[in-house]
Image 1 (cartoon, helix red, strand yellow):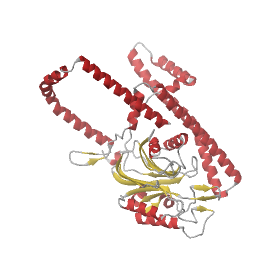
Image 2 (cartoon, helix red, strand yellow):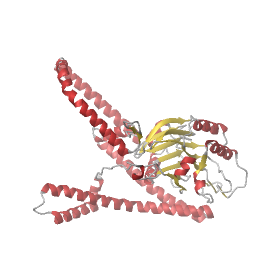
Image 3 (cartoon, helix red, strand yellow):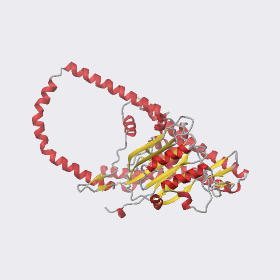
Image 4 (cartoon, helix red, strand yellow):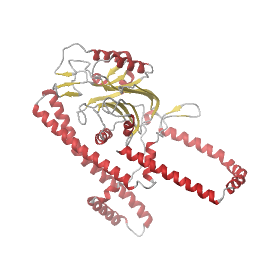
Length: 481
């Protein structure tokens, strides 16, 4: 299997100052927006969450979260990594002030460093010196440092109205930090002559670009694009970068029927018509009932997938229309600063926020309903929740018999199958010998227990299991709040 034979897929990394996500609805809206935009790594600032609250971000598409907390009213940074990313953690560095968190590890076999930083509003030399010391102690070839640095690096280009004043101490310290670490402003490198901004100050009615994605030279060579989006769910704009990975292994997905569609009369009518069409076309004496049924299920599955895809596309149409309208108005407002344009921008942002709030509240309602419906039953719900809270089961790499390390999923699967099949073959001959040797001893030990003692043991096991189930469900209920 060669590298050229694998499909490539861009890695999307974003940085966003969320301006506090204590509210469960806003938290859900942020995660839903990042999921819709197919973000693999999210660098968040000003989360305003405690250590326990940060863990609530590990849901849905988020597989791993690393954070630094301060309190529930200020600061706080986090790094969210998609559950399907082949990332192997090496080290986590975070300060005690909730200003930055830095992680190192191996992404598709390459040594990387990713960090999320929130600089103080006023100059603080200790912040830059600590951040420099922590990153420079590792500093692998691939570095991505994103965050809100609260300063414009080029006054003439990063402010509107433009400023001709000399660089502030914060801007000088940020530039020195990038110079010492060998980092580049990705957006400015890709857009050297453009003016765009990430923050609008309402009291001063001025724009500024204070959110950055700083990358190393090796990362810059892999950069395909870097863009600034409009302000939607925060007063800061989202800055995103797309990188070309060494390769990408597409995952297989299992289809499952969305049972809520069965309460939709339009869907039921569509399903009935599709089934009538299939029966009228394929039913004949030459086709057995079992073959007809299996083929019919495959036919209906294709029809349901087509129906749900069209419905999802129509549902997203309004949201995409509002997002495009906001981007257009935001671009016009940055150049004209017109009051009428600003009012239209606020109206469109309010409409989009209301739409996303409705979606988030609906999703939260169904999650609570599912928990209430199966809350007193140990079954699939508890199993899936317990599985979701467990650590990542992804095998990032594997060494073959010659000591060569592989990172491709297909190659890892091939060698794993070979190893376990060999072990099974070698142990199969010994299983009968072990059984004949230890079977009498096991039987004698079991017979030592009386029936009363065994009943007491089973009652104790049942009690412990019931208590464990209750505690799991209670923790899950608190997690969903």
